[in-house]
Length: 70
Image 1: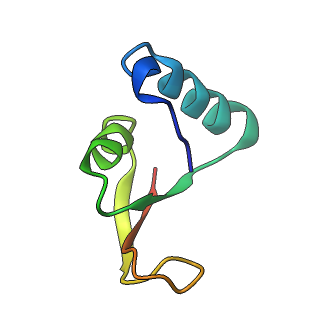
Image 2 (image 1 turned 60 degrees about the horizontal axis):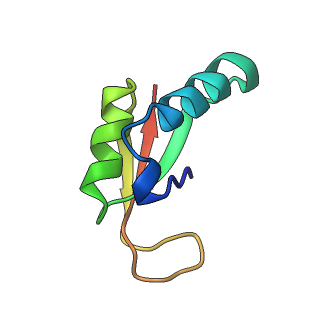
């Protein structure tokens, strides 16, 4: 997961991190909290698409997650 502080959003930092991850580290999958539409939109804009949804996070807490792939 990628977290950018609100005051730094819109400056291209997230895009640079994602491009680096994809190009250098072969990352092709991300997990996003479904309750964060801004993050979902960001990843969709970067080419990721949802392929799976869960009602709970990996620790069993009631935070629905979306799993997205390029």
